[in-house]
Amino acid sequence: MKTNMIGSWALSLGVLIMLPSLSATGAQSGKQTASGQTSHATVDNGIDSLQQLSSSMVLLSKRVSSSVVQVFSTGYSLDTDRDHSNTNLFSRRSSSGSGIIIASDGWIVTNAHVVQGSRRIRVRLQQDDSSALQSGRSGHALLEAKLVLADRDTDLAFLKVDATGLPTLELSDSSDLRQGQLVLAFGSPLGLDNSVSMGVVSSVAMQLDPESPTIYVQTDAAINPGSSGGPLVDTAGHVVGVNTLILSQSGGNEGIGLAIPSNVIRSVYNQVRNEGHVHHHGIGISARNITPALASGLGLSGEDGVLIEDVIPQSPAQSSGLMSGDVILSVAKKPVQNIRQLALGLYSYAVGENAILEIQRGKQTISYEVPVIEKQDVQGRLADLVTKEQNRIPQLGILALTLDERLLSMLPSLRNQFGVVVAAKESEGAYIGEGPLPGDVIYSVNGTPVRSVDSLRLVLEDLKLGDPLVLQVERMGNLHYVVLENEK
Image 1 (cartoon, rainbow, N blue to C red):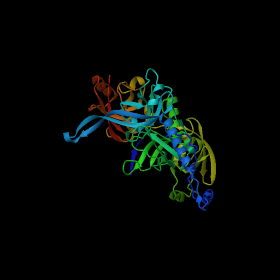
Image 2: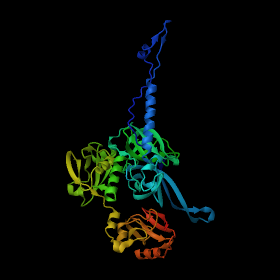
Image 3: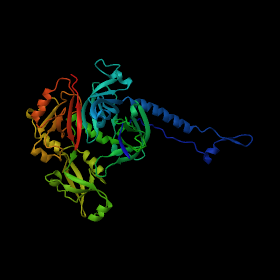
Image 4: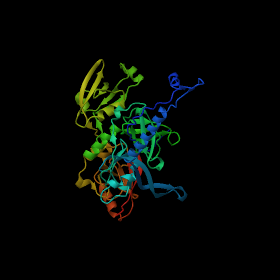
């Protein structure tokens, strides 16, 4: 089974499809001829309903398509040419996906994997929308886009184009979705612009990894590679998700498509637009789903809820009185039956607000108010160690630290004992492209090893204007080449 990254909005159809029936009642509605034979009137209610449905779909598609864009991403990748003694070669890479206009002043949401490693991003608006463009752009539907933020944890990215008065799509409350609900998927599958397909919600909260809080809306609406970032919409005309993945044996559509729920999109977008970064909520616990074996072994009364495995010392959970072995039954008075529902419940709170949790401890049921905080990870700890004056690398737009014993104790096991750790992103930098990310460890620049922040600065200063820049970095346990350009 393959999991492929890939790439909907709708008016209320307002049509009840009534198919013709051959009931006794229907037979009696005919007229009897002089010969005694019955002449049945043409039953056209079903045909009229289908025509109304078809007309509604036409109007719907026209309205929705105006808010769906095609996203073009170009960059460089490192290839291995086996015909030339495995020489490493740089080649230009181009890909496309889809996106949704969610604010009239040029904000677009797509998938992070659509724009990953991009040096240049452009979006194609529908031609009818060209008149909305400002600054003499009328008549041009292909615009340069700036990557505002790409959040790998949620696989969402937000772009900004220089345009106003654009048509937008509204985000729904994905918690209201129901299995079997009619949905439509819009996007650019296999690079084919402005495509739509229809299906139903197969699952309202599909979880690929039972121990991961990441959840998706599953649909059988046809989506394929290139549909990533396009909208999945309900019949009320609201976005219920962003098309993201397909599960496939062949690599193409097999009726199992996955979309990021609209409630997650709304939360991330509001944070990006208002604060410039994304908070990942937590209360200081680790938890797991309750299985029959787990319930039996621990003597739990049932399998409902989520079991708290650990409470982090000095966390809000510990300060509030939560304990290992407690079972979380509800968040915000909504029942919790698995980790995905726990995560969505916490997403409904802003950082600093108190989450209302109902806990089962033995035979007791207790209510707690636990402050929601931003998860403190290694990247956050690294950012606390830097200052702009001492750790700034302007060419890359980062704040960096020399890898030493203190940092080695904070980071997971690394391939090397030297290098430069990226503590934070500060700006776009002088080079075009995604660049190194917080948490990356830079080992070399164009093949030259770097062992300190000072040596990194020296290597970068020696580069000629226009020279390509290739960083070897370790990211989440894997080595990567990060290729950047300077087009000045």
